[in-house]
Image: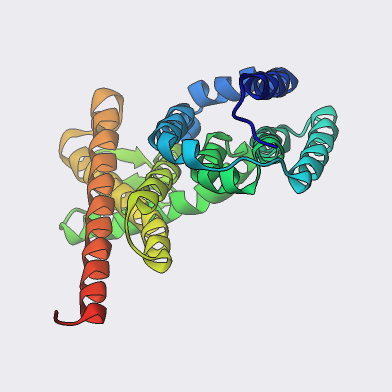
Length: 286
């Protein structure tokens, strides 16, 4: 069954409209989370990034044969049933996951496996727009918060600045600094992980180098955040705790994120160059 005729396009359009209507009740709260929670603010860009990669594949999509899939149809029924259960049960995170899962299954059932392979990255990338539950964020953020405080205190002491740490508080001679939950680094981890997936997808290296690139986003983000906290502590020692508030605080967050992005790009370049060298050695002299 091909889907190239205008009638087939209309039917697919109607199915997508029905899908959108079915998930309309959960979208407003999800968008509100994007706008309210800075840990999930990167999700605002995800649909646009997916559309960009979809547009980049437009020529390949035109050449891809289309065929309906019974397996996709069965999984569509399963994911719709799960969505109904979790929606009625008030499980927001699972319901939001089903938003993307049912879209994948819908397109699979209508367009077939060949087309799904072409759409795999744009569709899979949409999972990054699902807000991470606060309970999970809090569980991860607190240990990261303490780790950043401990390491930053040690780095500040290396600068010959007396500092005493108690929990997530740093005490200096004339001031004190709280390493709040927002300074745990979880925001940078999520944003840089998303960007590392894009770098890996667009990189012409083998799968294990792509895996290294994606995994490297986590230590890079944590390192950048520790440098931010340490730098803020040094400035607080000399200029007071006002450096940890307002414009300077937000600006330092931007600078440190750009630093993490630059390091991630550097790692991507090193892995790409290593991949080229490996291929050159395999091919041997011409």
